[in-house]
Image (cartoon, rainbow, N blue to C red; front, side, top):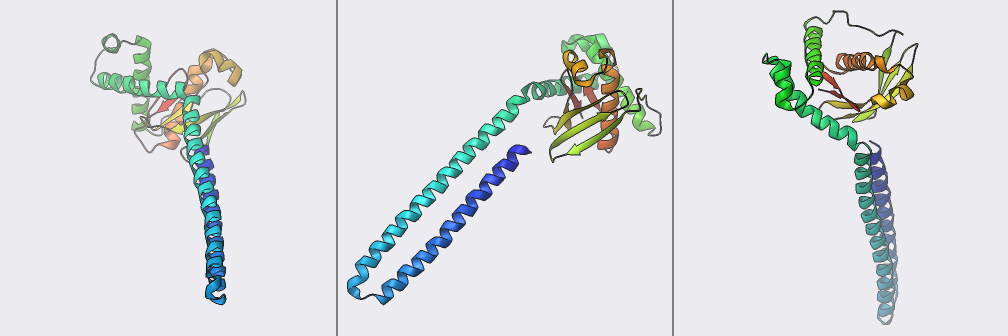
Length: 243
């Protein structure tokens, strides 16, 4: 993503600078050797002194290039850390939800009741019920790809912009238009930044009571358009996780 691109540009600039230094060294060495051949034996010391001076200049340039690389690596590490810290809330939630979701889904598929699962995992029953709804919806959806899904009012559409391991999800309808960043996940297929309840109206312009409806539609569309089969999703407070 952006951090990798910046680091690549810095690396390319360093390599370019070193290449220039090496070429200049070769030119200077050739000129010095020619001078040594032309001069008498008595002038050899002078030629050697000139060569030593050029070598010192070259070493200084190389030292500068190494320092530039060291600073670039340090800056790259800072950039990566800053990027993680910026979205720490979403990353942490996605990781926690992944574990709880996997455990809950296994118990649901084993036929256990919601209160039993909720008590065992130490979560609210509503959390289990949401996963149960997702499991049933996804199973039905892939059992019959032609089945009609519920589409919110406003004729909404979802489109994606890809930047490699991340990008943007765009929601557009006759009622609203907003965007969310997404990244490929380590514990999930992808995570999508979603407006939390307290910022939903400000970011989307839609009533809070329609949040679940809209986010479920977005999750279904992502699964339908971006997975080949067997995908699912889970809506959280700050992140929508795609599995």
